[in-house]
Image 1 (cartoon, rainbow, N blue to C red):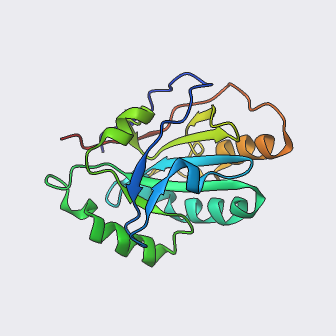
Image 2 (cartoon, helix red, strand yellow):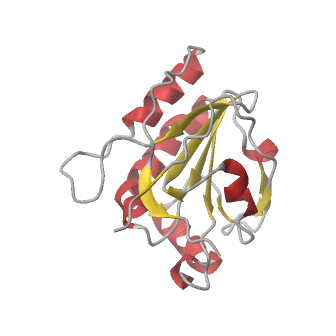
Image 3 (cartoon, one colour):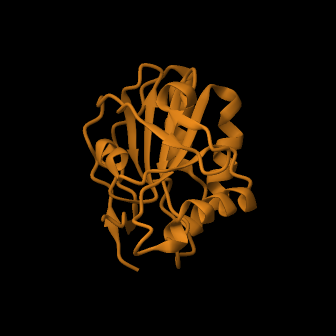
Length: 184
């Protein structure tokens, strides 16, 4: 497994505008129609990456635990489907339905959205506050495929708990590690 780290763009960066098709509903999703009252989690994932497969169940639990607490969720795949056909939109839809994703799973065909966010790997996580300012970027937790560390989502859960309570999110943040985005 190749290991690529998050770019760790500056905190306070404004969320980019975007419009992407949800592979399940067919609806066009934008930051404005998925953002939560308290904050928004943008996840760059894909179907095949072992790092994503390792945390998929935790992503579902995370979104289910926080979606009714004012947090919006969105997953995006930007992988080149010519080189990775298993990440094509029809396959994305199948995975989202199989795993009961409680969030839209959008396809970034041009890869422009991934680039505008500074996404580098899968999974890569970005949390924005109610004003669309970046308050967290980095890992879900310390668990990785092949380790005995359980997947808890503690790093993102701590950030979301602080955001919901109106407390500052710690700027001690560790990069996510995963497969590189498959650029065209």
